[in-house]
Length: 228
Length: 130
Image 1 (tube, chains in turn brown, green):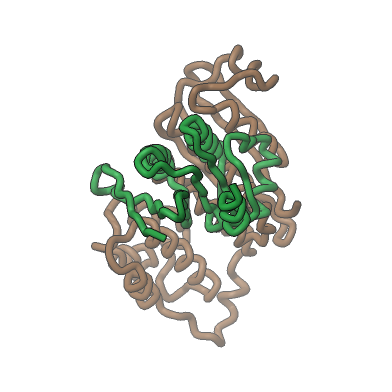
Image 2 (image 1 turned 30 degrees about the vertical axis):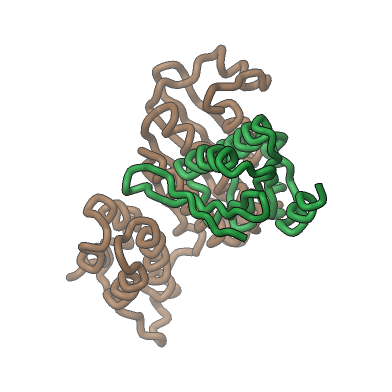
């Protein structure tokens, strides 16, 4: 049985690096382990969408050709078999990804993913920009202060009224109580503007939580609704 | 109108020409797509050098193609504006999209370091008047 992951691995071979390829396929979650011919139209579209984002960002050479190759590698479901469509989970539940943040390129990638997810969930343009901007701030803080970490995006709630749950996590130096107090009253301004970035996210998000302690890393959890 | 490309020295991977165009004594920079961090820093250096080199009296940054501006990019824009002002020229940022403007307001960041105008036309008209 050939899985979606196997087939994509072959199609992307040479176009993007081994590490990126694994990360792209890994991000597809359970979809990657399914037999290639078991995908519904909707699932196939999701896979192609995810892959094309990665191709656009990381592929060398002719990106369109790579995308065509990938599309060709995944068989198109027969239109009449609607059973697969019904079996597919609601659209909102499928929006979930974790992006490793190690450097500045990952910040841009995370920003793009956030935008894509928000749009796919039916967020307004303004809401999608808020999400992408917040992700940009948090990912940048990770790069600046912790060196590496991750940003996770997950859709929660009913389709149509879904919100995005965002977690930015790192194992960096953490933030001292003194700095936190200064952050809270707005008097703290780091050289690279962490204070401004965190304050910005707090204002953009519909809910905001910060867990940190010196030596314990930092975890920011926030949610965004699609409207407003 | 003299098209003038100012390549910036950097490693091959990030080699990206900063597209600075000279228009009647002003420098015009149009940013397309992502305003990448490295590029933003290159931009700051290239603009100040080019301002000095050409004796420009105004710099116009067209951001109408930029979808997302976060606090870091805002700070770089303010820095560019302030350094250009210190050199005796004026710095305009034009074309900020409505949703980006609303996001900046909500974030509580400011763009005090630069003059903002609705579009390129208005900024150029104002520069020409002086």
